[in-house]
Image 1 (cartoon, rainbow, N blue to C red):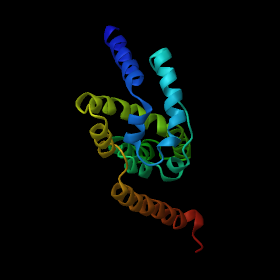
Image 2 (cartoon, rainbow, N blue to C red; image 1 turned 90 degrees about the vertical axis):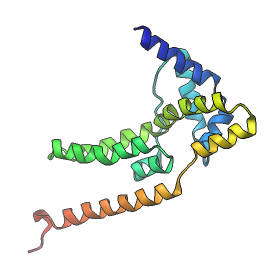
Image 3 (cartoon, rainbow, N blue to C red; image 1 turned 180 degrees about the vertical axis):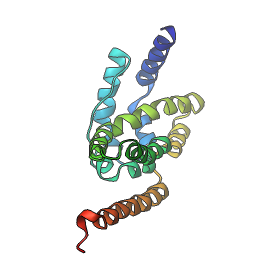
Image 4 (tube, rainbow, N blue to C red; image 1 turned 60 degrees about the horizontal axis):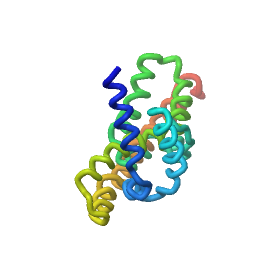
Length: 176
């Protein structure tokens, strides 16, 4: 119980001590779209020590893991590639649930991003004390990766094409 309490206190400390300017520098492009989620999440964590903020992300809904790779969230992006494959193998007749997974991920995307970003920002704030140097280091560590977005986007497009081809070539749609 003490370990959980210490983690909550540390999380509250990180969220209380991290100014929006550092978060925006870490996020990079379109940081202002994250601000309402950050403010709500910050309020919940400072008040309760935990909590999730729901906020729908259209890019995440349509692009799934591509958005996470674009935002340099390698672990979550990788999990979103593997998770549907595992679910299809475990529950082959329940493929309709993958649409539900897309909605849940789209609603949690910004919150997940901020949950990962704040501890990373706190570590950088501890090492980079100068304003300009800290902002530059935050931008390098966070920000976006167009190359990762392009590579994962190509993979995403190929996987969608494969699904479309498999559906159109299945016995149910065969004209012969």
